[in-house]
Every structure is written in C-alpha cells, then in structure tokens.
Length: 353
Ligand SMILES: [Zn+2]
Image (cartoon, rainbow, N blue to C red; front, top):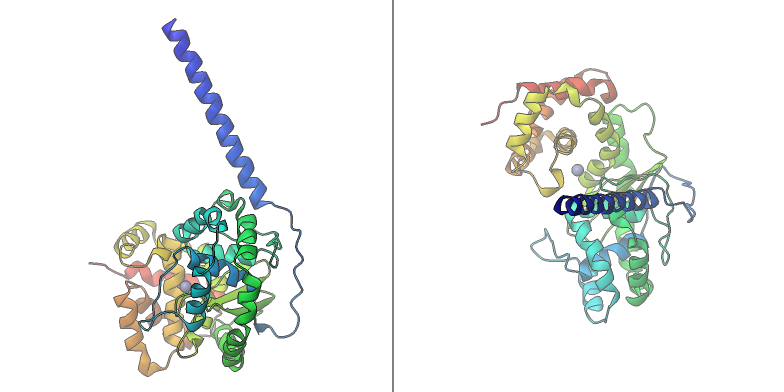
C-alpha cells in the first residue's frame, strides 16, 4: 500500500516536472522565434550614422524610474537624465509594477543585453519584433511579455511627450559627434586591415539616460550599433571600442584554442574577481582585453603607459602583453582576421601572481 502510494506520487511529480519543462521550452521557442511584424527601414546613405532612438529612451526611462542609479560622473547625472527622472517621479505609474521584474532581470543579466533586445524591436508604442535574429546571451523566455509591459509604461509615463521635450538635447549631442564618428570608425577598420565592412552599417546612438562614459556595441540583424552614454568631452574612444565588438568578438571566439585550456583557466581564475560584472566569462574577458589593447595602440604614444596602468588598475592585466604584441602586428601587413591567433598566443606566456 505504502509503496504503491509512493510510486503514484513519484509518477505525479515526474509528470508535473515534464510538463513544466515542456512549457518552459515552448515559451523559450515562442519568444526566440516570435514572428517579425514590425518593419525595419533599410539603411541608406553613409556607412556610419548618428541617430536619436526613442526605443532606447523608453527602456532607459523605465530603468531610471525603477532605481537604475549607477553613475560614473562625480558631478552626477546628465541634465537630460535628471530632468526625465524628476518628471517620472511626479507621475503615478502602476505599470511599473508589471515592468519591474523585467528591469531587475535586465540589471541581473546586464543592461547591455536589454539594450540589444530593445533594438530588435520596432518603434514605439508597440515595440513589436523587427529583427529575427536573437542576439541576446540570455534565455529568450525571460523576455516573455516584456514588449507589452514596456508599451504600457510608454503610454502611462507619456514617453512621447518626454521624448519630444528632449529632442534639442539629443540633436545637440548628434551635432557634437557628427564630424567625429566616420573618421573614428574608419581608423579602426584601417587598423584591423578589414577587407570589407563587417556589417551593413554602424549606427551611433547617444543614450543620455545612462551613466557617463558607459557604452554597448551590439550587432542586431545586419547592423552594428554603438550605444553611448553622456560624456564631458566627446568620447571617440568609446565609439571605436564599441565598433570593434561586433568585429573582434566573433574572431576571438573562433580562436579561443590559441590559449591553452589550463592557461585560460588559470588566467580566468586570477582575473575574474578583479574585472567588472559585465565580464564574468573567459571569452568576454578576452574580447574586452583585445579591444582595449587596440585602443591603447590607437592612442597617442605619450598616453599609452598611463592607459595601460589604468587598465591594470581595473583588473585588465592582459591588455599590456596584448598591446606589446600588437606592435609586431603593426609592423607586418597581415589582416587582423588571420593574425589574431598569434596575438592571443602571447597569453600562453603570461604569469599571474
Ligand atoms: Zn567592451
């Protein structure tokens, strides 16, 4: 009797677990392969463009309303960020309750991933799916319903009016960067000796609701984006940095075996506690280190030592050996696409203590 009961209970538990797993798998597929219903306007004109993006503004307005307070500038938030926060604080926003779990998820998986997500969506107020690739390094099911929650917030917070009111500030930021973006990206492409552009275009989006000097460089569909936070002086280095991510990340990923497994494990164990929360896996540390090493080499030679020390203070101890090896790369004529394994191989000689 006892035993029969036990078997029945186990069967029930198994059936429940199986259906839960099936439901999760179905949700994952439904979100990941959600049909594209919003149009994507074709990229025309210059290869590098600047734009103001209302989707990004909506996402970051919501993040700010829900307690995204991180800031790198000792003088505090940008004027735009402060104004929008003040406006939102004066509104009653019941929709925030529905949005909060998603925003907490964004901060947990990294805000950059949610910036990528919103750039896959169509325009406000619907935020319907516009790009069929899933470019986010997190389970898709976490995003189930996010579009509708954000759309409700957009209406309730009257984002259209807030966005309209900030147009002059975005236009001024775009004008400030207009002469700088094209040469900045061209310099990077020339340094990497690219034979053809890696994507259909680069779109640089000022993100005045973010922390100062913060940037993201997602590739969404056929386009590369540079999402850049406010900056006191125009932040050309950030544009170059973010423009390199869609080029160098995949290259590094196919050459991970250039660093021996045991050495990679040792280096990762030494670096992981020192670098920021956005770099908690070995490929992410490598992407970042290679890109920062190129940035050091693009800088004025008189500045390089200071930049290297800054990298080391932030825990990026691989930037110095990589930057040293880049001197050899520069002296040769090989494109980065084929030189990269040789560059990474210097890390086999690095010791940590
Ligand atoms: Zn980066």
